[in-house]
Length: 387
Image (cartoon, rainbow, N blue to C red):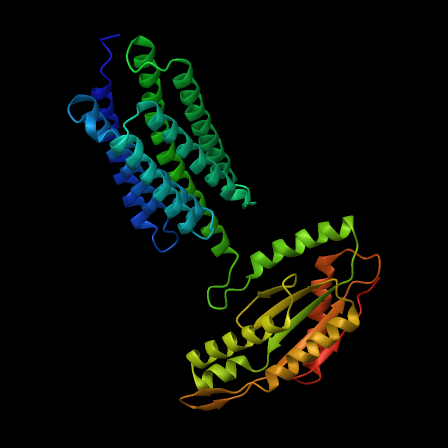
């Protein structure tokens, strides 16, 4: 099959992967404040491009450098693996990557320089690719948000396919050990064509992950209060609806707190807007210290907050409210206009046994707050839900 020019194919593929690496790198620069994975991914694609380029030189004029392309391919695997860790928010596995690169380098020096053996290098290359692939699959076992599930599924398919291709190449190398002839040329041609396809899909997958991550960030931003980083009214409403569905399936005691900062408008007029923001941040800090991970805290307005307490009966909710009230009462914030104190008024209500109307829970908590404010400030008012 002399009409097949594998070195020319490798040069063309290396140029295409170089362009894909540049595209991924530029995309990574644009989203560097969100994630660093794309830039590491670009390094991996660049290493693969260099591997193909040097292998084309090995086939034509530099046969003694046969181990260099395999080492560059290992660098590409390392970059892809670290990029996966970043994309899926895992700690980077530097120790594993460095250990694999060190072992691979020593083995390549043995089979490429000290004791040149093509089949040993082919076996080593395939095993290295499969080991890195298995390590990448480990990062894909963790659950992901629904908005990022498509990219997660795509990468599982890419990694599994790449491992399978390398295993098949290894098996064919054992069945047809010759380094020349039509079978060898066809096997290598198919492999390097698949390398190009996997490079393209890796780049497309990277762009998909960037898009999904940005979309998830935007969706989260629409449900998050920018100052306090707690849920806003929209995000809290979705949590309430999800909790209502859960209670319909399995009832549990649930309570709601509605909290208003007393005289917040007067506070900002006297001490300034910055002092008002600081008061909000300190209040949020206190609330988060008192709540559990399963509870939900939201800012519904400038000084209006709501707290959803799961598995919390009425007496437990009252204790939480009293602790919050006392802790806020003890807060002191120092401003250019002098020390600032403020208080909160809290309305509390709980689901009666068998009730599941969480929307009515919020309405009743509002009424409890209004009742508390009608009789004073810095107090807690409990109101039972109507059956």
